[in-house]
Image (cartoon, rainbow, N blue to C red; front, side):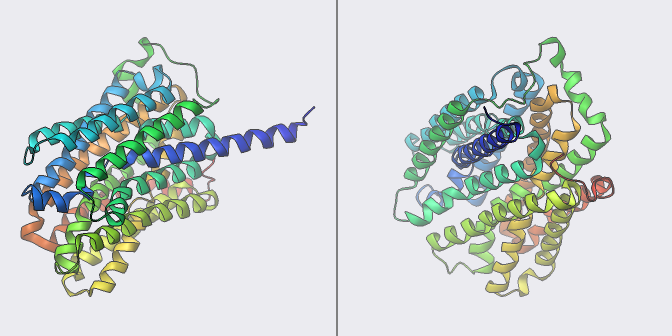
Length: 411
């Protein structure tokens, strides 16, 4: 017979394996998110798309994600059905909608925007449900596990740029087809794994009334984590959207090829994965709160430096700054999410995380729309629009440093 120690070790090994599988599935599933952005140069050339057109397609995904997360949270679907099954269904449908853009006739941005909206709705069943699955397998390792998950989400966001770089001579449609294929694989991986053993039983419809879900914002620790997360979200997706534009038309002066820009964008966004991993390790020693506010502060400083000194920076110095910024801009996300997960009632976990995501992504609609609409006139100065996010986020999350100093993120 196995000893208690052997049983515990076996359970931890199984949990670690499960988290890795979920992380890989998240990497593949979230490659749908920026797949069209990686093809932006080709769309601008062959379809006559403008920067604002690409911004519109990005906003469509965000709006779909918001609609999906609100549907999952306010109806209680996120906590009434198997998370692994929801993940699979959303990955399959998301892959179909993503690939559907390849058969749209040139210049029909309205139809592409509708498909991107539907992709965003499907992503609502991939990203928040992935977080719920991670917590279901390792509730005592939330900070570290979510760091790995969001690291892979960050790589998933960057992945289409890598595909574009590797296959620069490919037709842009192939980028979308590759990301759709990866999403299907990710959905199957999660479905085969199933839900973790640490989820409560499915809750009833009565207990999932809208008012009950919204009550989580009355919990001080949840509210502080959510406010920090909201400030972080104002900056994050707008930064990711602006990176290729600022690289090509400001730092590099339009001298780099599309393939070279894609390679740089991949490295900058992928640096966020390293930032998440470092943050996860640091959270085990210093606590989620201090790590989250430190990363948000570093990100805000990078924004301030680029806004103030951007025009005078050389290309090499600017790229280094973008690498640091890319690492810090997302490193706080898993820590804020872990704090939120720890603060909310267990039976509302999926819905609480989903509604926090919904509000956060609603904020990205505003920042993306404003910055992409002004970048052609403002150039580097458009970065100033991102600065209020870290500043207000730090103000909202200020209690997290005091209340979590030295706290183990895994508790």
